[in-house]
Length: 544
Image (tube, rainbow, N blue to C red; front, side, top):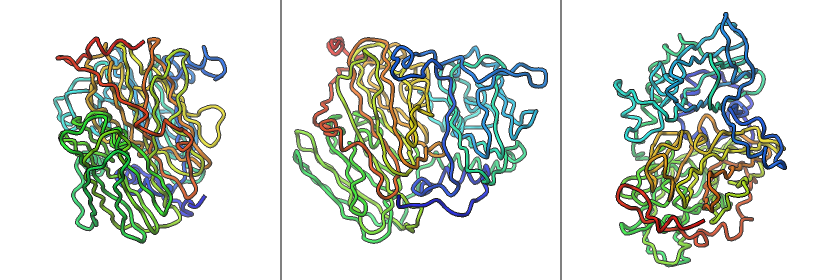
């Protein structure tokens, strides 16, 4: 309702996709070339009936594939095969060291010989022809600028992430030369007739400057735009008080806004202070700072992705593009129990409103004490209307050492009775692996340093983010996103999820029906006492 796709198709090429990836405005408009976002993964094929709990929560999310076949005298395991014009936009796998010799092959447009033939681990760790940040490892100790150095070699037991767009005109088949392990692939299928130039190594080499430029742009802070009109306010908000900034009237877009809290601010303040916004008199943003900016409940945990940045001193900055036609207001509300000193700044710039323009939404829900037995699906959001799903943030409080992240995402698009996106684990959705990472940042996925350290101990708070750019999910009538609650222990956990999406006029979601779950002050934070070395004190391990 309210916005329409473009009438004229444009040719899709590697370079056009790179340009789209680095253009923040592109997310705020319906795509020029309509597409569906699809997913294939190694999800457990027993999961066919939500009413059968034992099967629905089965966890054999590996060694799954479509079929085997013989190609040029080789036995190969097919993990993706789809027809039509499209583009691979994301590929994740764990980089297990005993898979170092496994070969991945990409066949395009029905060809009998592959266009891409490379070692899987090399390909997804940024050590083959694709370099960071378009292929990288999700691991501590090294940001993506470090990973771009030629001497980097580490890849054992961690997540490999490929974000190089790989277009194809008529179809794509991906195979491995031995039994697959875990994998998740996102790809686009464009409407029939969309002109697409199929990926070739010759074109990739010819586009090397564009590839390098796109990668560098995604790792470089955007320069300050002198054309932005910036408004700011500072206040000490008592419980229940609000601060609001009315933005310039007429067609425009929020392009940069930031929040600063006082140096003595707590994690509870991040959760209790809520960012609000309305565009053209429609309230579209209601999200605590903790999840909106991806810092979770830590005030000094740096993180940076394509749309947000949190500095070590606690400054919070957003670069989501938020267009409006006539009027807008952005504000902060203190839902907590103590005063909080805040400073809010909002920068607006030009925007040409057209039939493809959409409104930015950021919504939130949280719940304490979720039982891990029996297992269940926990809803992030359910949207009604037309739009584009562009990311989410999950903050979890885990009271015990056991691993909590086996839960799979289940995404239902346009009224599907069975989810077309079935994942292989919470950590896999957020791009890391084996429960090993303690922190990481990239343009696409991020995790500020968590409370505990090491693979064996996941007590305390963990916050993970995923920004969906080329792997954004279009929906025509609605979208439902559930995450499976799957913990190794019988315990109780606290979940909070922030969701980001663009919607056409009239799009709504279920956030208003969540009752007390909508109020962060009803979701008090636990205060884990971190011992030297990073473990939570045994006093905090008394919950069931």
